[in-house]
Image (tube, rainbow, N blue to C red):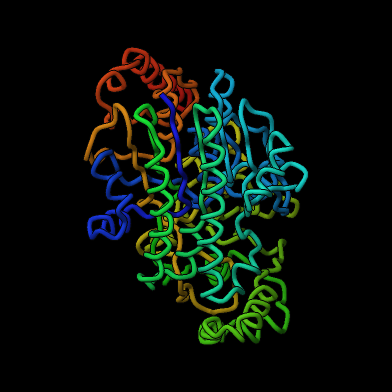
Length: 492
């Protein structure tokens, strides 16, 4: 058996089901009718990084040390690349490569540089250096001849392109990348993986404009149609996403809320920030006018930072995805919260957020593993009520309205099609992003590493794949349950 996995960043299962049933997405419709599908639950925080990392390893962020592409360094107020603070975990293609399988990896966002595998690798859009774009290195010339183009990863470029130009560029990049991937499939391979970012980029900008969003799904659908015509009866196809999508209408201002509760004290803000902040919502209408978009982006970027008075701050947040850190004495450079206050303060913050209908978790409720100490003390999660999170201050209120779309945890995409996969089957049990890697290993008949958090999605299979390795899995689950009980007894 060969396995081909197509990653669609931000693909929303709800939209795919609806538009496929209406005949708008014929390739997706064929996959749903002839294969198995269901919603795929993402990770918290619901970001591209760490979501692709968790999908590729089958492990939670506490085991891989990745809670975001940039994250706070332990014992510091600085944010650094998560990859620079932890060892590199083995991804699914590393395991397969070690077992002699030939792998092809193209444009995975968690691949920051290409490295040696049994096959070929092309770094993703967040690559750290132009010197390590491909393995083998000479494959870069082949990509150049094929007209390959990396994703638009520069934030300023993404934000300032007109709607028409952005839409055109996104569709063209997908066609170029997929064309290169089809060319790679002409050579020998056992496992192939490509990630396309078009849907994520389009939905962030165009959510709410269904005809335009549909056109981007149709562009991907045409690529899948070309792929399906090439696959033989011995090849299984998986379509996966790192998260789903939804509205970004209601944005929670986490640092503003902490400030208003007396837990965060900013330094005196620059004059420009104090002038612009109260008018940010009405001024955001400038964003829809292409001639004024550059001006609006520059104002937004210049007023985005929050300078914090650490000596008068007990809790603070960075970024746009809700990590809250306690300014703990002995851990942070200018910590003020005593260790004896830590749990009480966390309880106070979480209870206060619940009164606002904002969902928040202690880090140990979400994560486990050797890198738990790198995790935020509290994590705020987006849901039906909170669509987005911002660390900006100066609004004198807890929520603001925004436009476009944002990531959702609960409506990501999982589709499986091919030999020994059930036809027309909808997954009713919860499928999590951690389950993808163990399911692929199961398809190749390889043992699962003991520290993977995911399970084999056995319910999607029929025939030999439905019964393979049941005894081993029962032993593995029994051992895991015993370890959990021993940990609980140790805490008592």
